[in-house]
Image (cartoon, rainbow, N blue to C red; front, top):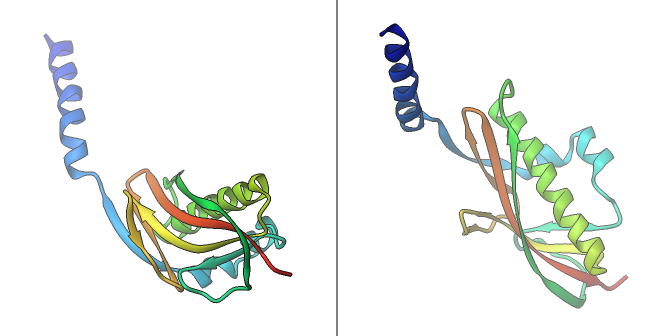
Length: 146
C-alpha cells in the first residue's frame, strides 16, 4: 500500500513539474560574451562573424543561410553564464559550417528561436529553464572580398 502511494506521488510530479518549469527569455548583449577570454580563445579569427545588419566587406559569393539550435546544461550556472556558454556553442557551429562550405564569414546573424527571427546588431535571444538554456541562430555563410 505504501509503495503504491509513493509511486502515485512520483507519477504526479511528472505532471506537475512541467507546469512550473522555468522558461525565461533574455535579450543579452553580444559584446559582453565576445569580450570574454573563453570566446577569444575558442572562436576562429579567420571566420568573421557579423550580427544583424553590421557592415562587412563585399560579398563575393553567398553559400547559403544555415540555422543552428544549441542547448546547454544550465544547472548550477547563472542565466547569463548559461546563455554565454550556449551562444559560444552556436557560433562555433556557424563557423564550422562556414569552413565546410568554403566561406570566410557568417553575416546577417540573427536569433532564430522557435523559428522566430529577431535581428539585432547588439543582442541575442536566449531562453533559460531550470536545467537547460538554449540559443538558436540563423546566419548566411559567405566569402567576403579580401
